[in-house]
Length: 162
Image (cartoon, rainbow, N blue to C red; front, side, top):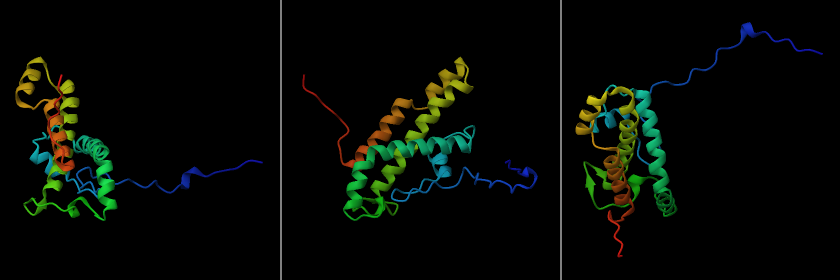
């Protein structure tokens, strides 16, 4: 017994949506707009929209991992989104928590971009100039972690007595 298939009349495969500039919708956390991140955090046009989106998704995962237990507690308490969590401080009509979340994601994404792009397209002279102009990856990650700790209500300094 054999099967015969006609490959000439196959329906075309669906084409996935390929707009890398579209807003990343997150549900409980606020949406992330790649165009706003690019503008606000001075991400150069040499970074393609696809690479920015990939870095943003990685950052969303990292920040989400750090905030997972806190977010679960807020959901259990009945809050349907980060914007619904009670917060006294509102800036430009949005909760301080929303601003901190977007900042953490953007800084983590920029850290990944700075880390990845420097080895590809800079000479030794360009590397030195890039070091002078761009914040270091460590500074970007530190500031992102500060934004996460601000959401969690934790201090920014750990001190140990020796």
